[in-house]
Length: 311
Image (cartoon, rainbow, N blue to C red):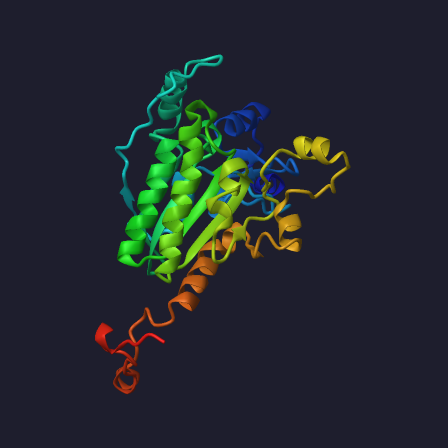
């Protein structure tokens, strides 16, 4: 419901004061679209997965909301919520790193920039990791790397497909080399997952940049991006200064990457859950029980490892 529709309905039931209108906007009843400026009833915007009905703009959402959108009912089981970040470099810029961590944790209720766990997606078992941009720009430090690595390793053992929703500015500078090594650690776990014949699908939301783009965000079997998401490694200005040439207006957008082969498919958020379910079913065609007639007719070509021969 747009603001104009809401006012039309209100006029039928009687006038309201400007003061009341301003109060309802301030109280969060309305949300202004960052792209087109249209005010939308927040309840309706949330029901539409935080996608603007007027222009299709995808609002940035936090990890709890993303999990709610993707995972069935009460099937979510979080993993490794007790892992806390450390300050090995005793890093300080304008503020001490430990103070930044405390502020971030108080603001978000999270220990660090990713939530990981197991759940059901349209009845299908999945290992899910969701990065949260509110946590220091979704930057990847040692906790993010460790939680994602454990997610992938457990999913490999349980033979679950893995989905990671990326939203990050890259590696966390406050942890130096410890943050950079997470790129290799996560990539190594994904290689083991791939060798086990299991599906990995990253979902690139706005923004996905830096070391995240240079590692696990681009290692998927099927790479999905949300419309108009910013995806890249270095910033646009840095690239322009390095190449000494003007870049296209749509450079580092999901659409640009799709046209150049870096992304496989762009999926609106309202269709993301059903698309992921379709991909998982295509990759695991026999996950659902077969009819009894088919089960009787199908027999394995190799029933034990001893029957396997090597050429």
